[in-house]
Length: 204
Image 1 (tube, helix red, strand yellow):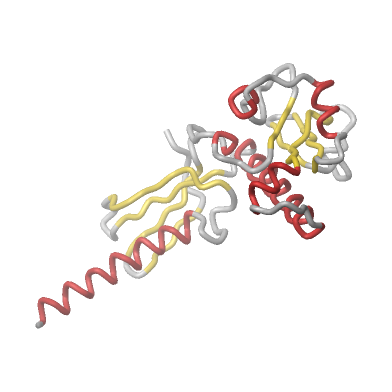
Image 2 (cartoon, helix red, strand yellow):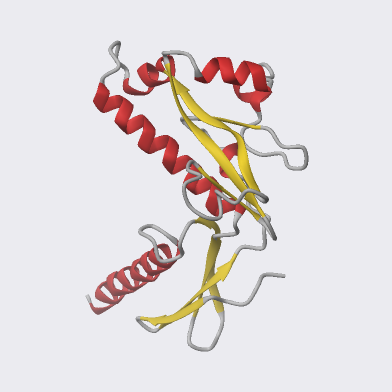
């Protein structure tokens, strides 16, 4: 059963409800990501399915060798584990600098070969490298949202409470751009636009 709603709004004669996910959504690491996320933990399976993505397994020593290469861009991944888990690329702030419940569990990285394929170029520029770091950071942020349950869906109802539409699996803040609230409003706007077109035809 889904949890209680976290937000509701009347919008152009319709009721939009934002509801937390029930935890059944697929991991964003199952999608086609740019970076490769390798994590090691004795109680959790985190990060990418490495044999599926790379075609072979990677142990801790091999991972260290990979991220030390000059043709690799990498960010460390730290985890906080206390009544739930969260991840970050920095351990400079609490709780990821907690000496008891946090520590480094792996890396997310991209090779120069990955970069060239993505930008269809031969030369890897500083501008590209800066953009790569932004992408890797964003992928960790999205995965952290997933792990911490920051995942939502929307339900659209009429004023009588009849279910009209719903969609689930939006990762990140519910009121973010192109998040569930935005998408629900887009659906309502589409319905109103279509209804106006029909009314014009009927008048003619």
